[in-house]
Image (cartoon, rainbow, N blue to C red; front, side, top):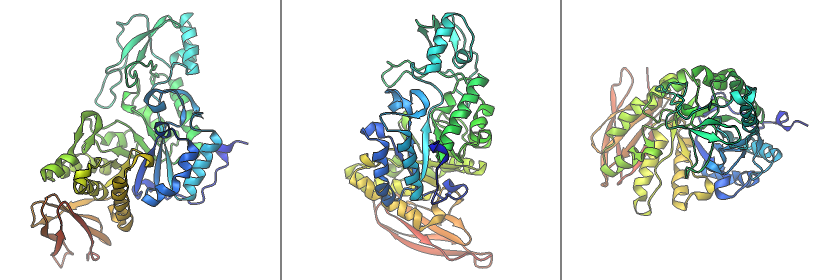
Length: 446
């Protein structure tokens, strides 16, 4: 029986569910030597913390590079993780609890043992052109110029190089060479219509298997790709509605076109944190007591993505034992400003302090639905210069958020706009050092 066509979904997810989602937890079972059954066994703990989305990292059969992203077989569960039956059980157990399951996939490069690459090498050695050879990028000389130009959004062959294959007796193009630079990962040719059709088939396989969304690794490095190729995955192939182009928007490119032109619905907010640049605006803003950079970043990045029809997500900084209150404040920013709360480590690696902070933030988002990632944020005047205060929600469901970036306690008076006839109302809040509060407001008159 084809198990991928026999799923039941006891708790159906709402349309565009990701806009109301509470929090995403990444589970990378290889990292902690766990299996899909172990992840399924952890679902109650994950749900108890408040997460309603799981991002499953690299479920395809892969090697040992980048935690298994070097794919050997796209439509086979990695044997180290379990079987397809185990995957289907995980999907069903997630859905039984109302948890969405998102798959983190790589469609940009493969392991050398990927069967079409092995066949392509043999064909190239005989100077044959086949469907397999077209899926990769070849050269007779390492001086060949890559035929795909670099653009603002598609970095193509930046930082890549030609590597010699004894088996193929040709050079092939690589970008990624592993964490230590000792891996050989053939880059897939997104300029080939045959590979684009195969990529759409792979997406269809995972969608049929029951996933609720997809993260595509390093899309902006897919060589030969363009907006048409992206839309073939996100829109034309009927991919799950939750879709994120990992890395995109993180190279000082405008994030909005990934939503408007590419059809993705979720962007990581690299204006707040960027791990490969060592940039952490949240950490720095809390340390300096100056929140103004946060609002500036949100206006330029998150709000432009929202205007294009998407949402943003990001994780808070890791807490240091001696600075728990500061870490809590940074987490509160993520939970309230209009970002989807993200935890990339997985439940096995969360410290007790992190679990406590995380649970508090996700409960806050559940108690106040207007804090979810979709929707506007309006900054309000406040008497205390250290307090970042803003409104979230609609006329019928508004909350005031006040975050104190000072190491001292403050009493802050916030000027909240009322209806057309009532003018502004003053709301006083008491805030401890690095404290925050969310206040429900009466319905706004028109």
